[in-house]
Length: 238
Image (cartoon, rainbow, N blue to C red; front, side, top):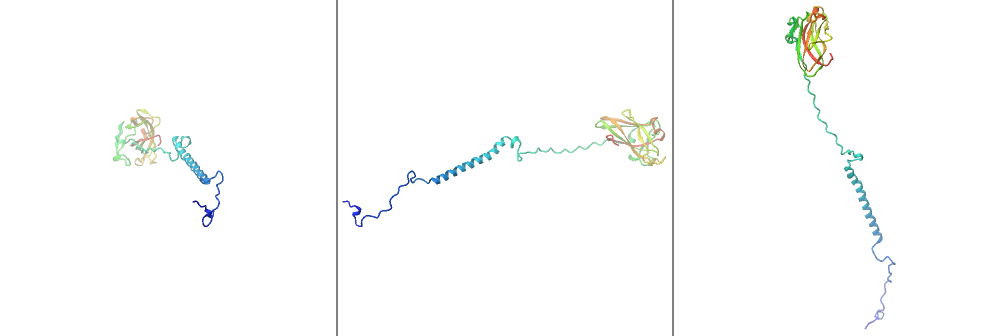
């Protein structure tokens, strides 16, 4: 037994606003504007990731080629070669030196010590170097290399100039040993005539002989000289 609504007590119910259908093609689906923003954000994140890969991945590629362009190592990769420790120079061996009294004496030469001022041990020197034929010979051992050497001689003269012939390994040298009165002693003052001189000689490696002799052409035959010490200096400087 159906009764229409309008027939029920109180009359017909109050109707709500009429239903308005959604515009054609839109419906009630998701918000299109929000989807668009999200899509743009995703694209931006991907683009940033690719850019970072290009930047940082490029350094790795360059590492395979040896760093910067041209294969040169970067500053961080540069390695300075290690320096070899400086080797201290070896101490040069001292060249021979001798007192004249230790030499081979010939031609009337002999040792003496009555004139003061000789530097040899005990003040002993070689006298008698005042006649033709007088000579003394020094056998020099231990020459490590051949070449020019400066022969130094300590001597004394009586206030007058003298000289003598030099022989090296038996060969006469061109210039005599100059035994000038460098001390400036007055004539006859043997004790004040001590001084030294030098001459260049050519020596060979090993053993050499150096002879001082009084020849006819030398002043020692008339003036004389006392011989004190002899030594060598490398080079041709006085």
